[in-house]
Amino acid sequence: MICIAGLAAPSVYVEATCHGHSTQIDYRPLVAPQHHRPETRTLMTYPEWYIVHAYDDYARVIGKKDPHHFAYLQAIGGFWSSLCSLTELSSAHGKIDTATKQMVYVIGTSFTVELLLKAVYEETLGRLFAGLRGPTRAPLDDVSARQAADYATFLQQVPWYKWRFRDDAKELAARATGRLRDKERRIALGIEYGAKAAYARVVAGAVARVGKDDLTLRMIVQDVLPVRLNAITNVTIIATHSEGLEIETPRYRALTHILNNLAAENANFVEIAGNDDILFTAISGDPTIEGAIYSSARQGAKDYRHLVLVKVSDLAENLRLLAQQGLHLEHIHDY
Image: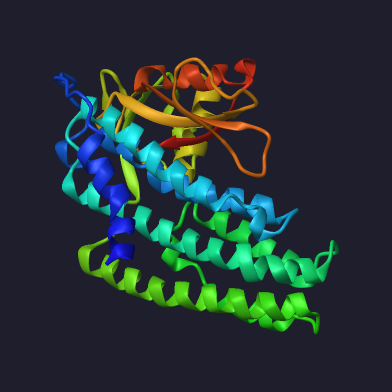
């Protein structure tokens, strides 16, 4: 019961204390209602991406060091603190729907459990075997680091439960040598991958029952020729409005590349998924930047991630100015 209460505490804290002030939303979407996604979700997608970034940080850390060098508690705390801040800000963009709240709390709790279990092992037995190994990395240290990097890249476009964890376990078994550290990595990570594979089957089954989220969205763009849009893979022109062209595009990581490339060609955006506000993250060497609503250090790197909320109509110009401001675009958060 104590463990359950402890795991539930962050969700309860966010739900009970992280409230902002609601405001009147006057914007009228140009796209049809069925293509309008709640604007609060541009902010509430960040907790999901925080986990993706955490796996990327982890891969970066173990690419050069050992797993016990990763700050697990810092990663957990960062999830819940950012969720609190974004929950407060979301209130100004409408009410957060119950399904989104539940999803964020579930993935946050799962993330917390996973990292706590990993921390307990890596800070004890994992650290012991790394010490017995000495400063020279064992083959499976490098194999597991590469697997972690591949997994982090995979998560940028595909749900985690579609990753082939059992294939990773098989690779560890095939690549292991007789060294003590390899034996330990094969067993410890093999158990971890097996547990994730089993959990993934459960989640995949649940998703199949409730239905998958839309993989595309609609937006209005201007200052770009139709021939250019037709040349972009998976982008379809839907209609012409006085405000610009309505197009349908992929979501997630693919959307970031499309928007960034169009902005570089001096295209501009009128609305995205029926909304006039959007969140993006950028990387810089400065701990804070003007206009950021939340900033945090990236593990395994000497730089910082900044969350910036802008009007959709200002997005393209902001993207065009990033480089001269010493910023590098990381991700544009859809809805």
